[in-house]
Length: 206
Length: 165
Image 1 (tube, rainbow over the protein chains, first blue to last red):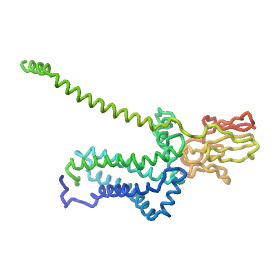
Image 2 (cartoon, one colour; image 1 turned 60 degrees about the vertical axis):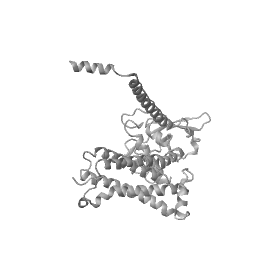
Image 3 (spheres, helix red, strand yellow; image 1 turned 180 degrees about the horizontal axis):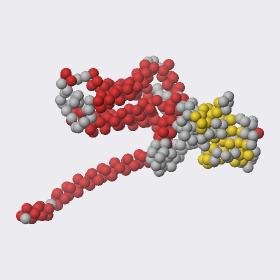
Image 4 (tube, each protein chain N blue to C red; image 1 turned 180 degrees about the vertical axis):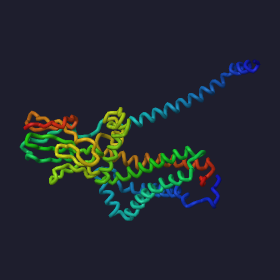
């Protein structure tokens, strides 16, 4: 592993590391929140209130999770901006740029699905808007341009687990937020770091 | 010339052991890819529920006399607005045509206003302000044999539809 000469290291080089730090903080605090949160439409909101007001240090852990997630959503695009401005996506790092873009999209999906889990009004209507956007997507959505799938077969139907928002939707968002997306992110992050290593360490200004 | 002959001989010299090894190699890969593909397809299919517990698209809403002339009734669970005019009834979808939020009936201004992005609709469902691209769809209304009215959310009708009473 080669390192960038010390004189070339800038503080902006920390942004990727910061993203990893916030990701790990989320991974650390998330399972503890799961100990008190039940993904049921009747209980989810009450559980979150319980977590914030009754459980010892519940508000602390929840806010740590929430702020880590929020800061990760800020850090990842800024890291991407640094990579773009320094031309660090150029060969031999093209593949890593693609992996990075996928990680960015997954970060946004994490933020979106996490936002829905308290199942308050904000979450419910955010989910409604998100699912309608899915419905109006090209090809995969039933109402979008070039649609080929019917309303009970399109992408929104899979995401909601039905034609309307309800318990199946919350269960799916919970699964996506806690298992599917973090798992995919962990795997892709491993690939991201391996690619950095293969390209000869951190990318310096070109 | 000599080289070509040598090449030809080399091709013929594929031994049984080598063929077996190659067959085994690609066979194993085939089984692996086939299994992974089956797993992938079954997971995608698994995500489509066969049965969903959702309310029926048709429902009864009582008799015409239950509603005052000029009133707008919000049926939140069904996501339908029921409007009584002098001539009769019509049912509007309570799903904003922009991004699917539920518009609010403003009695003072006599308009539907969507809280999410400010879309506005007249009482007849026509969009006139904000981002919505289409009017609110109107649903088919009929009389059930017992004299009560029925709404069918699966069937959309034209903007001039009115259930005469």
